[in-house]
Length: 218
Length: 107
Image (cartoon, rainbow over all chains, first blue to last red):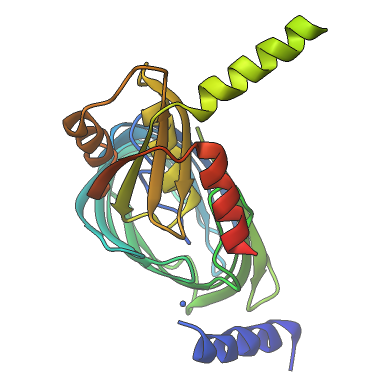
């Protein structure tokens, strides 16, 4: 049993004993979010968003997708608006539905040219101080390609953090790419740490590659 | 030296006697929630200090001497931050006491 499977088994066993935090496209009103993600060599992304309202953020991003199958590559730069469709505030939990849409330009390796690109997506998340679950679908399309990146995350916190204390989460992530980027679901186990506006997470995928993300909200 | 001591006592007593507003807020589950709320409330000129407790769904504000923030303004500030206010109380507990009680509760 390799290290990944052992860690995954540990997380699942832990999940049986405790009830299951995560990145949202809008952090808080009048807040700025800067995020960078390194996704196992297949996906690299950077985003900057400003939220004039708690339900709306506007910004720009860069996404690089490189196929594990045939090395085709996309370099997408885009402007995007994120919108909070619905929020449920409970005593000790919160759930959200977000949608987003945008447009930009992509470099397409097969044609060695640039194309107009559309982007749309949605996210549902549920969170307590011990449990985090989210499902995100992010689509990019142009004349010569269409890719959807679906990401499922289940997180468990070993303790309930307070605002000014370090939050620790163990997260299992499953990610599926369409459009010949990767064959099969990519699983990863991640350690997520955050305190006040700073967030960092890192882990390993089922084929032993690094998966990491850093985010700052201010 | 005596002047410094007297000034310290006056400052401490001014902070301790400031009025406190305690709000029960739903939806507080992470540090980013608290960060946004604290940032919004600190912009109010009547705010002296803010404490947020995720565990107790509590947002407490110490107001500056002789100042208050109307309930409607508090509710609007929290609602505009994306959270639900379930109750507002005015108390004489200082934020120093609240912080100490929260710390004790964690232990």
